[in-house]
Image (tube, rainbow, N blue to C red; front, side, top):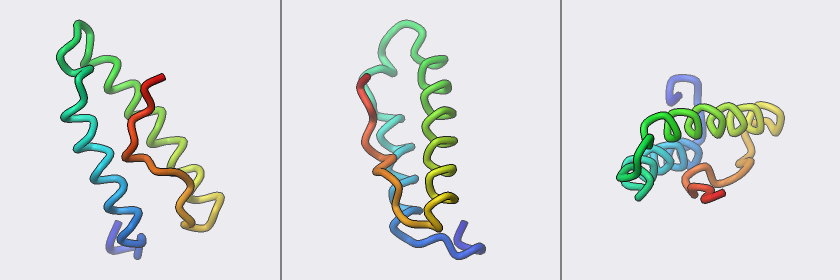
Length: 68
């Protein structure tokens, strides 16, 4: 991402996303792995689509885990 000049703020948000997924309480629940993989996949796709459509403007804070 740095090679293609993604803004540092977006890189930090993405890093925070994975840190928050790794430390989220859902990891302690039954069936957590599948839910985390599905959530990660869907949110990353939405986030990258939003970035592309907004010309690398910050679309939303991906590092905040949506509890719903």
